[in-house]
Amino acid sequence: MHGLKGIKRILSVSLSVLLLFSAAAVSLNVAAEEEPVVLYAGDAVPAEHTAITSLTDELAKSEYTGKAVVVYVYGNLHPTKQGVSSGSGNYESITNVASVVIEGKENAALRCRQGDGIIFSLYANGIPTTLKNLSLYTCTIWGGSPFEDVENTSLVVENCDQKGTTSVVNGGGVSTKVTGTAAVTVTGSTLYSVSGGGMSESRVLDGAPADVNKAEITVGEGNVISFVIGGSGSRVEATEVLVTGGTYTNVCGGGNGGPVGESRVVVDGESVVVTNKVYGGSIGGADGTTETASVLVKNCDDIRDICGGALNGLTKAVTVEVTGGTISRYVFGGGYNGKVEDTAITITGGTVSGQVVASGKEPDATVETAKIRVENAEIAGEPAILFTSPDADSATVTGSVQLNVDKEAYSIGETGDIEVVFTYITGVTLDKSSATLEEGKTLQLKATVEPEAAEDKTITWTSSDPAVAEVDENGLVTAKKDGKATITATSVNGKTAACEITVEKAADEDFTDTGSGTKAVLAIVILLVSAAGVYFFFKKRLDK
Image 1 (tube, rainbow, N blue to C red):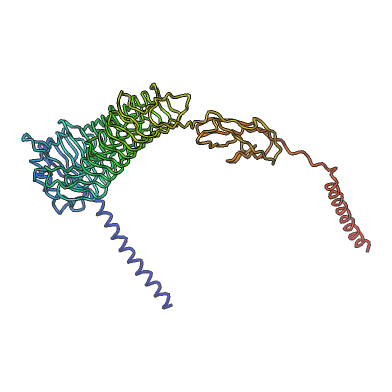
Image 2 (cartoon, rainbow, N blue to C red):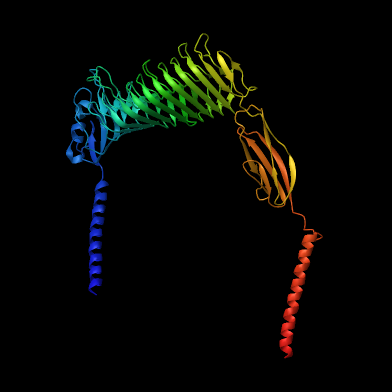
């Protein structure tokens, strides 16, 4: 009994402790989900609200530690009045709030340039920041800081329109570092430029590098933006640029004069418009080297030109892939005026209204080695494939070119050392067009592709009715039940050949077979003897 009471007491205490911890956890969750702090700023704050005098000073208060802050702007928010962090010296460290949303009310405007020409900037200082429903008067928005390194930055711009000449958004900072990821997302906005990097210039403090480890830019529906730039004027290790909608003049994965390690550009969707060029490399000066660049354009119907390389700088390794959609002029493996060491172009489906060019555009836009592969696509230019620029005395491929196309569908402007590899399969044949099998029997079909030199001879086997006749990955047909089924062999580029299989029931067993007949007779004899034995056993018992 005492043992039972002890157990009950232990269970009671354990339950009490568990309840206490549960209550603590609930209270912590409640604390973590507190309503955001709401502040009011601008020249036209309604009388029922108290306007803050300095956004910078207000956000630096310890009472906001770990809390999200929403700033409602009425009328104009001036840097000199509200204390927006600026490069002119009225900066204070803001590191204690969880996130900031600056949302415009009543025709709100953010003004970051004054009449004396001093540029004022809004620095997020690594705090996740959203700008929403604002008119931007020549603003410069930074995800980072002008004085201290930050780990990550996150800028979201929604439904903001520039009213000045150059409102720009940058994921990095000024002469500082982003050691992790600088993320920028823009929708429904009109801006001059969006970039993932920062800025480093001799006129800014001591000119220290504004490096970013990784820049991620996502731009979507409703945007009208002149330049989308993966990097900046300083080094960015890796960039990812995703374009899913909107209208842009230029999109580039590289920097604006600064070097980039690896750039990746994805332009995806029919609603995307690029009026000039998509670059894999840099859009800035000759010093903007990009180590590797990849450009993927999917299902876009309004892209003017694609350059795997840069406007000016060197791009060492380039891949360009176009899937579906329409490119209205050229696809360049090289840059506009920038050199490329190695390029590879793949066109899969869709239409290039102009030409596919292995080199770049201008005379200096040379490419050392190039590969071009065209699959099920239409290249409307004449000739369809060029190894030199469309302009006379212009860029060339200095080394070898490997070309993978249908020899009958494409004309080629030949120059240099060219290896043409015809990889298209033009036809598939089977060793049988029809066959009859008994249930349970098998048949090995053999497929032959043309031309014999085709690079990829992979065949996929299918059955129209696997319940009647199934086929494995090697073309072995197994008859399952009576009926008809069509076995189809399909090449990697969609060429087919078929064999009609008729399955019949297996023939009845021939009981004239000596072995089978003997076994049947013996079975009947044994059965009769057994029955007779049982009959006489019971008859003898009954006679008694």
